[in-house]
Amino acid sequence: MASFNLTPSGPSTFILMGIPGLEAAHVQISIPFSMFYLIGLLGNFTVLLVVGKEQTLHKPMYLLICMLALTDISISTSVVPKALCIFWFNLKGITVAGCLTQVFFLHAGMVMHSAVLVTMAFDRYVAVCDPLRYTIILTNARIAKLGLMCFIRAVLFILPVPLLLSREPFCANRIIPHTYCENISVAKMSCGDTTVNRMYDLVIMSVVIGLDLTLIALSYGLIIRAVLRISSKKAHQKALNTCTSHICVILTSYTPLLFSNLTHRYGLGIAPHVHIILANLYFLVPTMLNPVIYGVKTKELHDKVVKYICRM
Image (cartoon, rainbow, N blue to C red; front, side, top):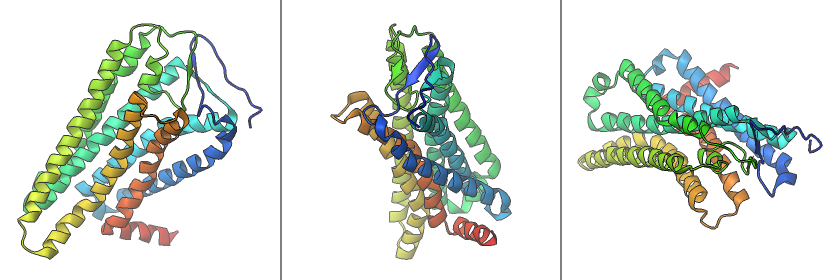
């Protein structure tokens, strides 16, 4: 595979280097990458299929799980196929238009993913703190509207990013030491002033991570307060069990995201190839684990998935 050298270079082309320093191990690295990606696709498409076919699962909670599955598929698919092309066939070239398109879908997917997690936190808050009005407050139609709002927010927040980058004059050296096009990585290729790009990226990350995490923390603060007011230990356990899977997904999603952003911006003494591998795992591990977490922790979904598997 290393004999292929299909890396077109021109005035409208960037070169993605993959994982600098580990070029000789690209094929070996691709094995876990492709396995994680395929397992993630299989798990998320299974969730979508089961929820879509089972009328009993057409409830707000499961619709939100489907939204999360769609964003996981979108994020990983915007990155992994191109990375595998680099690893397997040395296809390192990517047009500027293709690079900016990848930037948009990658970041829009991340913003959408965060918004869905906030909506799920609100869903858990209503389920624990106001269970008698749950079906009135959170109808399927209202969940669909919230999902549309999450999508619109992601598009409006991220659309200026590729538009700002498209106005930049890019230097002759268009080598990006990464497996995918990321906003800051592309901005570094510019010969012009990228202050606006960097400031906007910082604002977006602050709003998305800061605001969304604050809303999630607020929801769980109110949930904990409500649980502590319950005298029955059995009721305590039941209330907390309804939130366990969502908490696990939050940890698998935000922990690597925060780590990846901090290392990308400030280095923190981490070797570049280690950072790139960890950044790619951010797109792979949550996508692979999220359907497993909900499949194991959510009994109703677990039973339906097992039923479909047994039919095969």
